[in-house]
Structure formats: structure tokens, C-alpha cells
Length: 154
Image 1 (tube, rainbow, N blue to C red):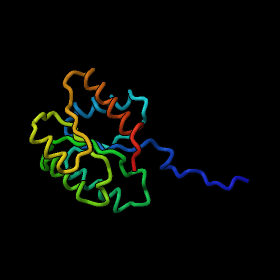
Image 2: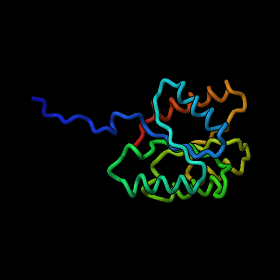
Image 3: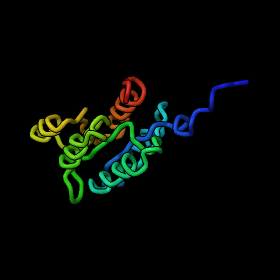
Image 4: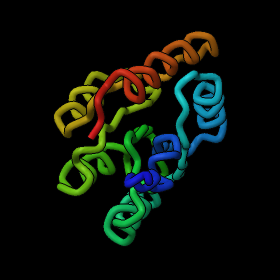
């Protein structure tokens, strides 16, 4: 008789990535990159910083018995309606229940002030969105493989 219980459903699902992105076009390009990757993941999109923080609070605090709803990676745009991406990053990294989740800035900003501020606030990586599809796809595949296949995540 087998004494091992089957894995809970959360272990059978691909990892969840929270994408905080207001641009439909940018999200569709990112989604296409994930679908074309050999590394499988589920994407959950929020379009504002407030929506993202509400989702994180609900997935971790309100439903702690559902680890499949907790993202293993956060992709954060800086140019969001309402709340700036830097404020979202600061809220994530100041919360001990969220701070361990790797947060990658994915933005069009090449502004050195933005780059320095994001790393100071605890960003794990800062990627500039490439405008040309092949370059964007290549950088996304490298990012996906690194964070979801190479790196050991908590």
C-alpha cells in the first residue's frame, strides 16, 4: 500500500506570475512570450498598483491555505495609473509577507533616477522593454528562463 498522499493541486499547477501592467499591447506581447517559452507559468494581470496590492493582500493574508494564488514572481511596470510603480514596489518590499517575492521592473524608462530608485527600494531586476518584437521576445525568454527555471525561488 502506498503511504504517500498525492501532491496537493497547487503542486501540479505551473507557477503564478503577477503582471502589473496597464497597457493591453504590452501585456499581450508579454503573454505571447510566456506562451512561446518552454517554461510554463500562469499569468495574473492587474492594471493598477492598487489592484495589485489588493490581490497580494487577498492571496497571502485572506487565503493563506491557497498557495497556488501566491505569485512566485512579480513583473511591475513603473508607469501605472493612480499609483506609481515605485510606490507599489515600496509597499511590496516593506511588507514582510510580500518582500521575499522577486520583483522585476519591466518598463520603458531608461531614466537613471528611476533605475537607482527602484534598486534602492528593493527591485530584484530592472528590464527595459524593447520596442522591436524579436528583441523584446529574446529578453523576455531570458528573463522567464532565469526566474522560473534557473533561480531557486522561495
